[in-house]
Image 1: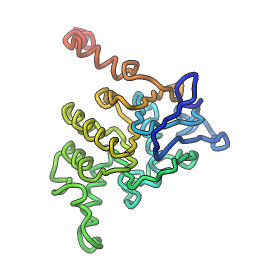
Image 2: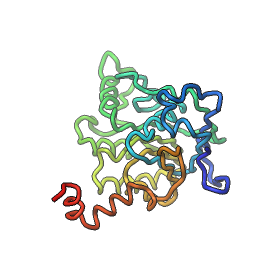
Image 3: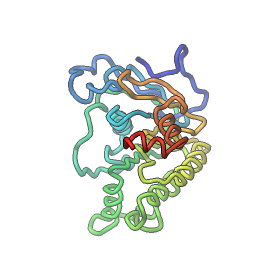
Image 4: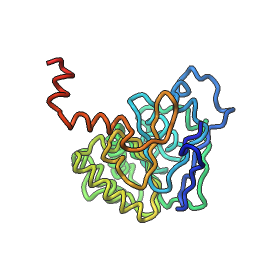
Length: 261
């Protein structure tokens, strides 16, 4: 299975940094063991990326984070987050999937790359402080590149936004794993605005998310990960959108149904 629009090859006019990821047949061995036991990893032949924004969506356990982590590692980024210059490791828990994939890059190269992983962002912020503290500090401090105050001295959501506002710049490849985890709905809207600004500056985003707000970004491709593998979809066809809409139409009734009252 190749993740592309049904019935025709997906082509994009705009230049982008990562065109697609291939999963050669010879890379697949024991499909009964993780990560090949996940349909998204087992059944895919290639996934093509939108030049601006690609979303990976699906239920917990569908393989979103496994796949996006593998893409980040494939692009030379630390599996726990950061740029290619970060080497910290709290626990070596990333899968072997990256070693099975092959990237197809565009002619252009990104000026900067970053992997934002919500679950290990605390460790990233700690590593930034450690690198700026003697005797580990060499050269000018890197903390001001992220915010005018320590990321640990801000709320989780504030530090996420500080990262996007200060560290993310033009011509960048940004791989994000559930960035909405720390963001209120209002901050998710603010993230959309900032993301749109960066797209206008030649950036490419690949995002694993549960957020219908983020998925609403108009110039994007959405892939659904489930037991069928990876298939293109639309915002309104995702379970995330349908479940959220159904709940908000009559929250009292939905709660009563769920709780049996």
